[in-house]
Image 1 (cartoon, one colour):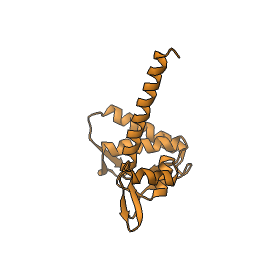
Image 2: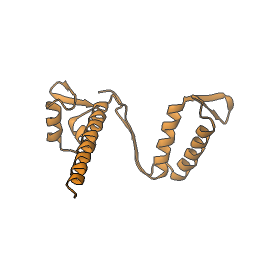
Image 3: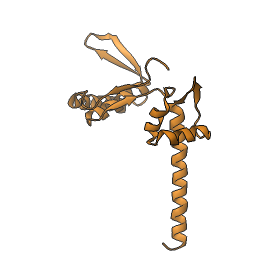
Image 4: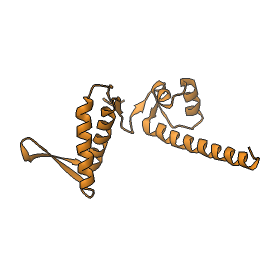
Length: 151
């Protein structure tokens, strides 16, 4: 696995008041400059030392700060991060044996590292999207059937 798979900030680590002020300023700036793809962040030393950030990175920072302002913890994980089967099961909120059945049936792609299975975070998210769509379809079909039967 890579050196750092995820970065976690525990709830309350970031000052909620400071985070709230920062997120309001960032959102206000982004709304006033909707076409700006690169955001210059000037420090106390002026424009010559400005930090240039992609708009998407600034939006992500605003999201992180909003969560911190609400007192929530935050985890940032790259989509290519490889997880153990226990980590993957925890993310899906299922048992490890159930996850292994999903892997072995081909529902979720994985790779072997020695004898150990590794699952990418991206593969888990893709599975969740497909599973949510299947569940919505099943619920819609049950609802339609209930209406047909007058329930």
